[in-house]
Image 1 (spheres, rainbow, N blue to C red):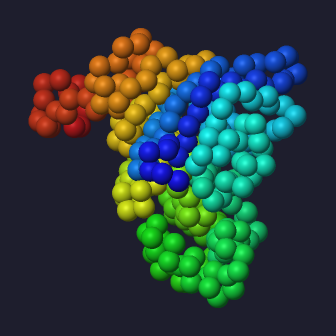
Image 2: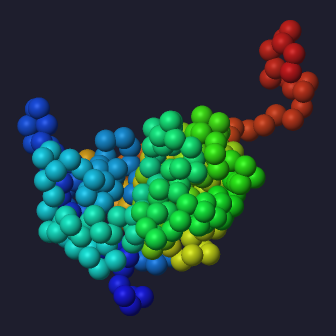
Length: 282
């Protein structure tokens, strides 16, 4: 594969979902690319179609309930016309970091068992010892402390941030060129969220991985993105470089998303300020 071919190339993707109330067009003709070492973000409110787009790209929507049209090429393989190609590239050329680690991981199997299975899916020739050694290296790479001693631990013994790092390690087990991260920090508090985003950017810089980020948080998008596509009702309403979208949004919907980002108010450093209500300790 030559370096000028996008890792992900989506052209006029449409996704119709068959529901009890009729057919719903959840994604309506979106086009975008993700190149090597690049982060492209789809942002929008809940129900805008961004996660449906990601699941459609991976061909993970229910076959009988979702109808796809358009073109999706992952590492040069067309996956809309050929679902078999999607199965071949998943876990190899492309990996998914799902949203909720508590539901994505099996509670009855150890961390080592689950990561080892992911490694052997990519490299069936690995022995259990070899898979363990590689798995410990991956856990070290994603900053899990004392990885050798945690190999036999269960998910409930990990914090939310460590479980999210575990999912990143499982995604990396397939040695992908493209990562699709579906709200990877939405279930984490602000401090842990920042450390996970820092980890993703560091891994991207080291490995040259392309990343499609799905988020509703423009604060996250402005930190990690090269380009942003703002999504509403299944369509892109605005697209452009991250700095342009954040600093000079053209659409009212984008400005509303920016206005929804929490901001710290003024801080009164004087404990005896006249604005303090009488009788209330500051």
